[in-house]
Length: 339
Ligand code: FAD
Ligand code: NAP
Image 1 (cartoon, rainbow, N blue to C red):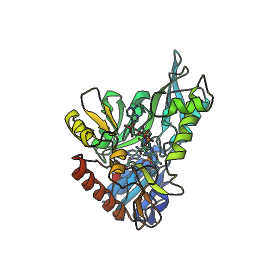
Image 2 (cartoon, rainbow, N blue to C red; image 1 turned 180 degrees about the vertical axis):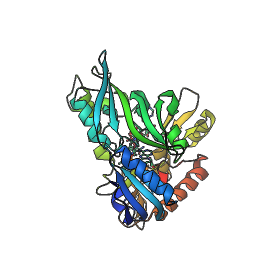
Image 3 (cartoon, rainbow, N blue to C red; image 1 turned 90 degrees about the vertical axis):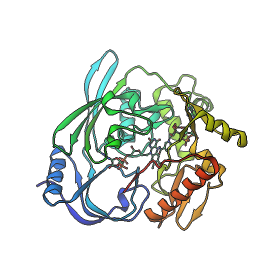
Image 4 (cartoon, helix red, strand yellow; image 1 turned 45 degrees about the horizontal axis):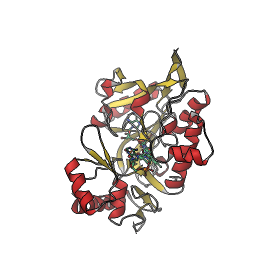
């Protein structure tokens, strides 16, 4: 028996909101064997299994009556090299940002725009993480997941993951797939994505005229550090709402009364609205009630000033949703996974 199962464990250190709820049972999986042992234990004792990584996309609203399994498996390897490209395989428990830095240090590009995202490699496909114009799907090769219904391993290729905006088959089929390792297709020759937000401008300010992927990563880390609260000092789960996709008609109607509307037309004719802008216009930026609040600098981020419960944060989120719907006719969907 290598799996150490503990009872009544506080999950406060294991979710970036810093919400203090208890797990009935808790264990860390360092290997596939640990994962299988946890599944067998859960089946035998008729207890639910909840898999987590870094806990940076969770809102825990109650004690968790389950075996919480934290993925802690480590290991990164190049499995294939060809024509300036490499396929890199990383274990689910690898912390995301150090993995990105490791790849850049080895001269492999593709992940630089996804720098400084908290969490683990194994959770990244769940919502097809994205930032600054790049999504996981752009560098994804394949992954290996365990089917919790049958216990069999399955390889998923890119089309089989059904990646969408903050979405995937793994998110659509909650609790079915346990991601064990992910493979990325990275390049030894860089194609940089600089046209999103203030990236290019930041590089210019830094006097960088011929940017490398490492320059881009550094610029993005600097931008993010200025704007986003560090969960170590202020509990949060990043963007709390997805940017809504609305019809061009609705976007035009909102613009009539709000000419400054921040909106990005999509290829399919819909328009993506900046949810943070809507929330700010509605006056929520910097709002605080008890220890639950809306961040002072980024209205899309809900924060826990210390002792907010998951319920407090959920109540605040629901008030914001209702207000935005009433003012703009727009439905905001929560991004973190609610338990
Ligand atoms: P967790 O929160 O632990 O889990 C998330 C979900 O995935 C849960 O449903 C869990 O059950 C499931 N899960 C976890 N691991 C596995 C596994 N191995 N197999 C199957 N299911 C699993 N997200 C972005 O997309 N872009 C950003 O720019 C971004 N910036 C952020 C900034 C901050 C400050 C914070 C706090 C969050 C940010 N996020 C961002 C959200 C979050 O970091 C990502 O979604 C991240 O991928 C979550 O990883 P995690 O390991 O913490 O997952
Ligand atoms: P920002 O640059 O202030 O932009 C606001 C919103 O407008 C973003 O959410 C982004 O949507 C959208 N946007 C900006 N430029 C765009 C363009 N050229 N084309 C299409 N859409 C554009 O956003 P921010 O809050 O500082 O975040 C910067 C990036 O990091 C964004 O990509 C954001 O998604 C990501 N991020 C994500 C999280 C999370 O938890 N999910 C947390 C922090 C940051 P998109 O979100 O669709 O990109």
